[in-house]
Image (cartoon, rainbow, N blue to C red; front, side, top):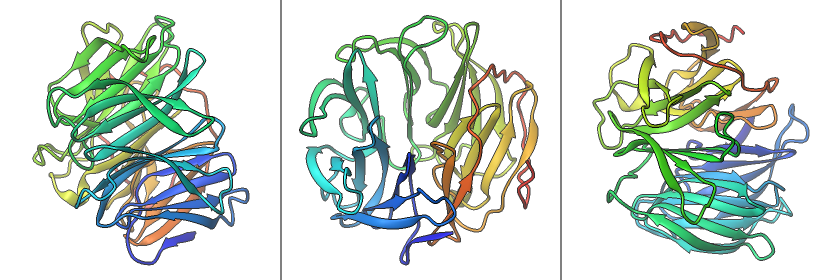
Length: 353
């Protein structure tokens, strides 16, 4: 276990090789970690300038030299996208700042020999910027702001990028918001993404996608910023036909809508979907067989946030403070997943995998 903060809880966690980044969500601070020894990770640097932080997101560049920090605050203090030079993890520096209205989700991606950053913002909506890796500068090339205020606060947006969709061979960008549900864009031209599919029965947040040459399955957590009466659950969507996306199932734990029970993050590893829930900890859905088969979970000893894994490592907030548990697991290639009858999962009080 590593203690990242003595004051408050943690948010998004990203790991790239031997460097990690943890968002101290209530403090507006990004802690930089040395994870070369998973048994003894260390905080080696911090980026700290915000006041009254609300939430945010983190994403590394492909080479790990840049960290993109999307920041939301309660007082609009330095809200927007911060590009950090982390080539020296001990001394992260601000290289570029893109003002925005309350940035909540960010993802770096490469397409057509260039680098881009996609931002989901409370005021500006979806913003696509070209990234200049030599200077750290961002140049906006596309803005999709409508409908207005479609991205709200925590748990009301998600991003997933598939650089080469197995069915079409084209890059697809999956975008979710609390107002529009799911939108799927052909991202062949990042300056002019074309919507090719959508689903909008309920607002959505975190999303994960499993694709093969014959199928696409989207796992999308329900949002709670705009509608806090929706029970915490994961919608299972069949997107095999982009023009006719359909819900085929739901994953849930049978709990009532409550702030301490909402879904906070997801990650799909092979046939297992890891779901972080505020007070129940991390649960695992085995979705590979087309039926629900609970695979276990980590006990809820605090606010589990952002169950995102990179390079076989994960960090989990513990006891609602600033501690994190570093987990190791084996990364598996994503395979064919079907979800026609996924309806229930039970969180256990121990890890049984």
